[in-house]
Amino acid sequence: MIRNIVCLLLAFAILTLPSFAQNDMASYWMNKGIALDNLGNYQEAVKAYQNATQANSSSYMAWNNLGLDLINLEKYNESIAAFDKVISIEPGFAWAAWNNKGMALAAIGKYEDAIDAYNNAIKIDPRNVKAWNNKGFALLRRGDSNESIKAFDEAIKLDPTASTTWYYRGVALLSIGKVNESVNAFDSAVKIAPQFAMAWNYKGIALENLNRTQESIDAFDNATKADPNYSEAWNNLGLTLNAIGRYQDAVNAFDRAIATKGTSD
Image 1 (cartoon, rainbow, N blue to C red):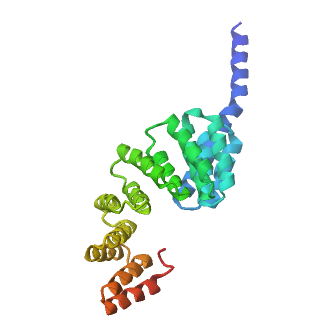
Image 2 (image 1 turned 45 degrees about the vertical axis):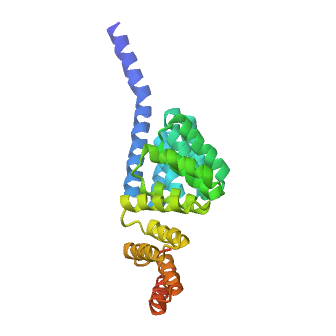
Image 3 (image 1 turned 90 degrees about the horizontal axis):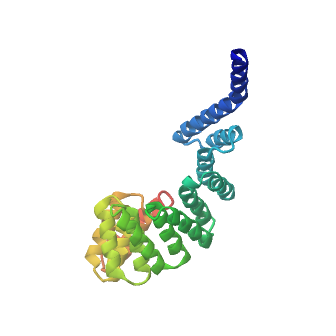
């Protein structure tokens, strides 16, 4: 009797060893992929994650990381397929996969599908700041500024310290003519992130629309200080200086715009 039990245990051990080794192999490939990601070597990281999914096809984290790296490599349709695998394998992680799938869809201009993906992420996790923020950005790119502002407002409720959300909220407000409100949004962005060059630049644009010329010049100055290679800000500074008769200063600003074009935009 004892001998039979030992034989059964040995048989069980032999049967389970391949599965155990398979899971180990998947984790090794996963670890290699993460290390390659840290080096910025996305091509090789993709190969590592593909090997991980071959070793264990139900490794949803390997599928997710594969999808993210495929986005980095601008292979968006392949990344969408990877995120679909995550969604089918692990419902508990679907909120992240839906959000990531939305990013891939938005990158190829499928904004309606991206918004649907973000909505699915939000249904699973209503406190998913990234999904609210990404939804707002997709709505803005689709041309629906009013709805984008609502999404950004939800993101800000959850994380009022997100400077990029304040910035995009400002852009949306500016696009529908709510210029004073946009200035307030850009103010919030640069208060959180004083070196946020794009927020300073757009604040300058909004202030110029309000004929607050000196303040707009100050904003453009801050944009160029934050990023000396920001050609758009140099150009906007030049236009504003030229409009008030500071022609030499304007020429100097345009010279900087010309010299830096292509280095930062």
